[in-house]
Every structure is written in structure tokens, then in C-alpha cells.
Length: 467
Image (tube, rainbow, N blue to C red):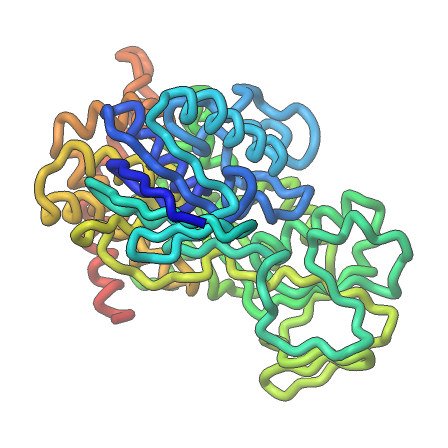
């Protein structure tokens, strides 16, 4: 079959959230053309493979593409997110991205979409379902929206052995369980493990029947402090100010985390176990209360091998098991590639986070910088990578980079306006919504500004200590 030639301005590899967010800005802020190639049959990237009960863990208002609202604009009145802004479910997100593609991108006449296709490099694209190939010429840039390599349980291979005869499944299959096992063993202490435990508790499983392998405990962010709506101004912006104060007045790294926790910004599942992990997950207070009902927590480190009658850990520990135990794999790392590289490199853009754990905002911002700045040096200066965290002290690197980016953006008048107008940036709108008579809000912003420089200086000190 002959190869078809396509010529466009931007070739975007990946129709996930970041690829879609980048393409959306190109379409709304320029007359450029875009080709989007993806190995899934529908846009949405890893959401195609996510577990059926997944939801966002940050408000929907922060997610999606800039030009189309995802949030319903409501505050949940029931459930474990009660009193907070809505969290879109996986099916809602898939439907959202499908609508963006079908009703915005494709009707524009400037988007070519190749699902079920793989980018092979050197401008070559091959179909997964036939021998059809395409040769693409990108006049402007190739945009790698797969650099972070998001992974989910259903598509990842565990880094431990599972012997024959062990009942083992990704949490995607939990809703298919019809026969009650002797116990459920949740493998993984991150956000996926949290979701699995909460789902089991909501679906009639006794907490004593749940055993949770948590090699590391994590610092979690209280979700009430991440609400981008004026009715939550005191909680959201107040938390930002309190965090600045905690950093600025801290006397050590441990003291800094203690102060941030005491201010109600960070929390942890077990008050008696000090976390050494931070992945940026948010949690509501009711969710936290549910998780604390599970007392059978296994802290023997990482698993090496699971056999029908025992669990073998990397440190040599062995725990008894039984063939009727159901192991639920939640060990996939959300981001499969934490290696950092510069965003703009010649004819390629590597989409990464330029704001703390906000990938879609980051992709949209990078697209805007690509369209409005001339030199690669200037583009990379404004798009310094905010590293994705793993260990607790990675939060220091992440927050320092975030604050440096925020400062650089604040010095550019056009960027201040863009941030104010872009729906994915909730904080700028919150700050701009303050009226002259709102003295309490003004006081919060003053606390934030007064502690900005001291907190950066303290972060720099801690960075030198962990280098």
C-alpha cells in the first residue's frame, strides 16, 4: 500500500490530555494546522485504559482544554467529596475529549486526526490495523506529548514476580469480582491504592478484610485548599499564604513539613508514620477518615514475589498468605518517565510540567509560549521544567521551580493577562476577584506577598542541603 504524504505546521504525538491541550491553544491563538496521531481508538490518552471508577482528584475546573469547560460548575452535595467542587469521572473525561475532537478540532478544517496509528520517527506514521503508512512533514515543530509516559494498572507490568495459582488482578477488574476472597491485598501506597481501598469500603467490604501493602507513606494535599472558585477564596488562597509562612519561618526541612501539616495544607493517612513520599495527590477529609478504618497495613517494603502461600519482600521478609487471597495491583507509577529535559529543542517540543502537578495547564502554556516568543532561549526560560516529585524532599525542588516560573511570568504583562483569561489558571482569577472592601482577602494576599521572597530563600537553603 502506497504511503500518503501529509504536510502540517505541528505534528502532535499523543491525543491525551496534554496533546489535546497543546493543540487547542494552537487552534485558538493562531491559524496553524495540526496533525494528531495516537495509538488509541479515541482521544483521551491513558483515560482509555483507566479503571472504571476512576475520577479526577483535583477539581474538574483545572482539567481539559482551555477553550471548553469540563466542570459542571457545582459543589458536590453527597459522597466523600461533599462540599467541594465536582470531580469528573473517567467516562465523563472520555466523552469530553471526544466532543472536543469531533465538534471543535475536526470541524475547524485545520486538524488531521490519526487514531490507531503509531509514530515511528523520521516523519513516518504506521497504522496499527493495516499496512497503511503516512509520511508527515511538520513545517514548524514536532510535539512529543508522550514524554512523561503516563502508566495505568491495566497496561503496566508489575516489577515483582507473580507465581502461577495466585489470584492477581489490576484494580480495573475489581467490579468484576463475584466471589468473596479470604482477604483483599492492595499492592501500592499511591493514589491508585487509595482509590482501590475507598472503592472496596464503599462496596460493602469490611475494613478488616483489607490488607494494604504500603512500602512508603505519602504526604497528601487536602483537597479543600485547591478549589478555584471565589467561595473558597479563604481556603485556597489562605492555604497558599500559610504555606509561604510555613516555609519562611521553618528551621529545618522536617520542621517545614511539620509546619505545612500544622497549617492544614498537608495531611497523612497514619498520624504515627512520617511520610517519605510525595506524588501530589489530593484527598478530602471524609476520604481520609475512610482510609484510616483500614488497620492491616503492611510496611515491609517492596514486594519481590507473590506465591500462593506467601509474600516475599525485597528485604527478605516473608509473610504467610493463602490461595484464596485476592491481590489487587495498584503499583503502577502514574508517570513512567520522570527524566527531565528542556522543553524546546530545535524542531521538537517535549511537553512537561511547568506548574506543580498541572500537566494540562502546562501544555497549554507551552503552546502559548511557542506561538508568542521568538527564540528558543527565551521559550525555555519561561518554561523551566517543574520536576515531578517522588520522594518527600522532591517537593522542595518542585515548589522552588514552580515559584521561579511564577515570578518570571509575573514580570511579563502579556503573560499576566493570558493567565488571567485562561480558564485552567484558577489562581489568577481568584486574586483578581478581590474587591476594595474585602479586607480579609486583601490581608491574605499581603501575607502571601510578604513571605514570597523569604520562602524562596529558605527553599534555596534546603536545596543546597539535599543536593
